Amino acid sequence: MMTLAMAALTLTFALGQDVKQEAKETANQVGQTAKAAGRKVSRETRQASRTVKRAAKNTGNDIDRAAKNTKQDVKQGTSKALNKTERKMKKAERKLDNSK
Image (cartoon, rainbow, N blue to C red; front, side, top):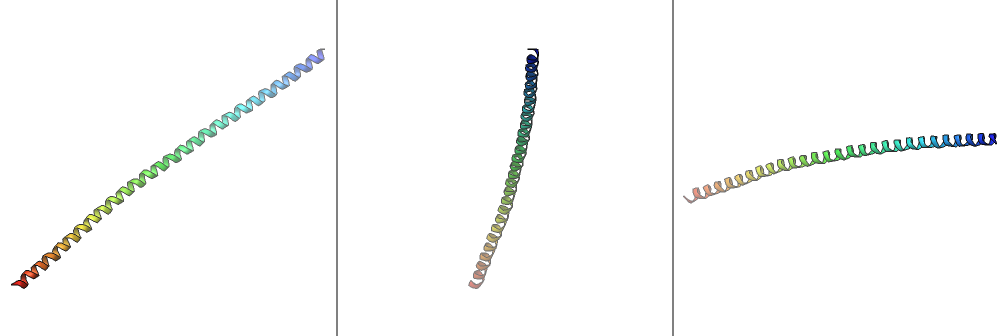
């Protein structure tokens, strides 16, 4: 009977050790999974931040380019208008001189 009790106790102790080891491994895996998830969130956040930063920079560049183009368009339009006015004035002067 004593041998049987000792065998049962040894078996129970061995099973308890297995359960304890499995619990440690499970806890370790849970910890690794949580760390991996945290790293992934961090990567995704950095990537999203870079994307937003690039978009803001591109928008700023687009606005700057549009402002420069508008300035050049106004400058060219003004020059064309002045040239046209100058040609009309010369034409009017020639007509005035010819009419004398």
